[in-house]
Image 1: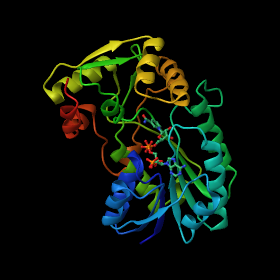
Image 2: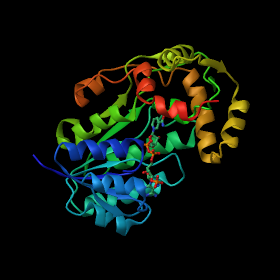
Image 3: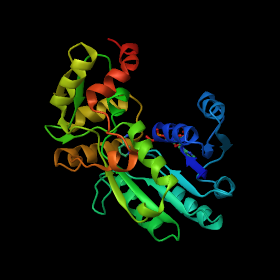
Image 4: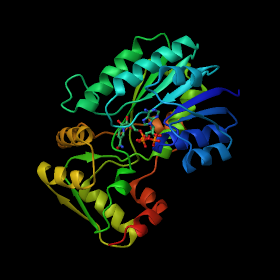
Length: 290
Ligand SMILES: NC(=O)c1ccc[n+]([C@@H]2O[C@H](COP(=O)([O-])OP(=O)(O)OC[C@H]3O[C@@H](n4cnc5c(N)ncnc54)[C@H](OP(=O)(O)O)[C@@H]3O)[C@@H](O)[C@H]2O)c1
């Protein structure tokens, strides 16, 4: 059945793939973007109805929600998640949106030391209080982290000790999101942790990257202060740095570890492993060669 679906954060990592997949499956997709640019034009060319808006502007969000059956909501690690979530709950209720898929994260906990992770947890509870059927997604670290943090030297300098996770690609998450948006009822009230195919420590991740790229990649465990300096040099916000320092400790303590069958069971396909993900994104690594 063709559905009217809204994707918020449609130019981001998970939003873009979700929009593309839903269009391929024949749905009417409204993509909320903050500005018209080449990313939004790419979505429009594929058939999305692109609307300019902002989750901090209730009126633009309410307009975007008009006539919508179900919505995907993602927001970056930035201040303002609570405000955005409250606006979404209001806009959805006003417009009779029946379901929301909410991007959260695996470290979302009442007691989280990360401000962003704790806000994700409160945002989940806020949406739970709305009359809309809500499904929360709690992914572990995205596989895309291995491209965005690549510095071209062949060294992975992270403060993760020998903690483990199964990196999950945004495209695999989009398969789950699209399937829930198509048929939300069985997923109402559910919280789904999302994982990639294989749980590894960063020594194992470096080995998988070495195989995929045909060049030596080495994991160098570092302490939090060096990591902070790396993030500051990259221009990360204080909000993001506070988050990443706190979740690095979570990571060491096993919060990001685990595996399940959610991607296969709901999304329909096995998730990618690191080697395949890196091989598929080889051009991004070649662009950043040292
Ligand atoms: N990365 C990880 O490893 C990881 C792991 C677990 C969970 N997560 C969760 O994933 C979420 C981020 O998802 P993502 O990576 O798919 O997104 P993303 O790539 O960070 O993109 C965020 C999207 O939101 C849009 N946006 C930002 N501010 C907005 C506003 N005020 N109004 C409307 N749209 C706005 C952005 O538009 P512009 O680009 O135009 O600003 C962009 O399209 C976060 O909540 C994070 O906690 C991430």
